[in-house]
Structures are given as structure tokens and as C-alpha cells.
Image (cartoon, rainbow, N blue to C red; front, side, top):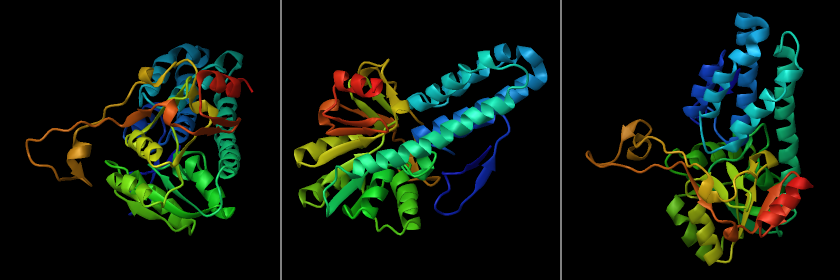
Length: 330
């Protein structure tokens, strides 16, 4: 499995090769690959690698010996539900496989990958249809091809919106502490020749006050059954600011991100990452020696602050548990 190392973009495009599931899990933890759909796709291919190795070592007993490795893979990042979904989907196919599992599982992983791209394009179309011509949009973190199988969730809507003539101003938060907006979103938009203006996360409210933003468009790492949305830290602040300034708030994510087994956002585990990510930048310490840091990777935006959730199955306005269940059933 070959992954583009997102930690060193945009300075260079560096690809890393992985040959076993433990390496793939570490790549997910270390943010070589990030973005909930991309993590899920990576996990699916990692299951293929694991099945190959266990079949070679254990023969027909591979279905039993592989279990511990899959459980460790699920724990690589706890907030993004796509990771668990992909692993459990792949695990659920084991019973029907006889003999060497590699070809069957590789086909399934490829299907997950290609379905994600198709879902992204459908979400882009549905989300763009909600946007009035001449709009300005703000996005947070990275939700493009780098975070998905290709095209993107929130960034897919923005790509469609620009192509449709709906969006004429694109703003991107820098997204501390990993700077995914500065390093990744801006890089993707520049590649597409879509003009983008970066701003410090704390400048978003002032930009909204000036009337430059009509929609905030973000992705999600897990959506609870009631429509509460877990996403990159800073998303909740953007939603509060949007509601205060009369700016619409759109969440774009495939149904694999919806966790109907989690009733509300209060039940979503929030990943805590190393203090060093906040105390420094680019490997250089910037904080005063002796200072500590709090570094949650995600926050939860309550459903009442969300104007619309866009999935490949359709659009849910003012989400509630009943509306989410109907969308998932449909």
C-alpha cells in the first residue's frame, strides 16, 4: 500500500510504502493519512495486507489469528467512525471466503474506495444546489481528495459550487495545530486553479461580520444519531460564529460517517493528542518553556447549530434523530 505523506505537504510530495497492518495502523495514528473517509479506505486495504500475512502463516486458521490485529487497527484513531466501519465491514465478509482471501478482500477494498469517490461527487452536486450564485464560503480543515478516496466531501461541494458559478469567494481557516487548511486545502485548491484566501482560525468571526461569508461548509469524522457532528477542533467555534452572524452551516459526509449507535455527540470519544503539537510548529518549539497544553483533536457541534447535513443519500435540514433515521433508511 502506497500513501502520500500528508505531514510534509505542500513542501514536497513524498510517498511511503506499507506492507503490513501494524505499519498501516501507525501511519493512521501518525497522520501520514488523515480524513475520516481516507482513513477508512486505508484500513480496508490494511485488512487485505493482514489477511495475506495470516493466511501465509496460519492457512485456513487465518480468520481466527487475524482478529487481534484488526482490533488494534480500530484503535489507531478513536473518533473517526469510518475506520471502525471499514474494518468491521471487511471482517464481516470473512465467513464466506474459502482458501486464499487476498483477491476477494482486495476487490472489496477497491469497491469501498470507488464508492467513496462516487459518493463524493453526488454530495458535491447536492450541496452545490443549496448555494445561491455569488456566494462566499468558509471551510475548516481539509476535506478534499487528500481526506477521501477522491474529489472530497465539503471541498467537493466547493469544487462543484465554483464550477456551477455559485461560489465566487473561498476562504479557508489555517486549522491549528496541524495547519491542514494552510498546507492541504490551499494546496488542493491551488492545484485546481481555484483562488483561496487563508485566515487565522480566530479571524473567522470578523470575516463573517464583514458579510463575506454566506456558508460555512465542513466535513465530519462522526455524526451521532441526533445530528450532532464531531469534526476537527475549531468547527464548533465556526458554527457558533455562523449562527450569530446569520451564516448557514453545512456538514458534508458519507453515510459511513453516520453512527446511529451513538445517540448524541456527548457519547463520541474525543481523541487527545500530544501537547507538543500545540507547543510547537514544524518541529520548532514556540511556547514558553514550562507551559503545558491541551490538545483535543476534535470537538462536537450540536445539531441545533447545523442547518443542513449532506450525504450521498440526500439532504437533511435542521437534523433530528427522526430525520437522520429516515435518511439512513432511505
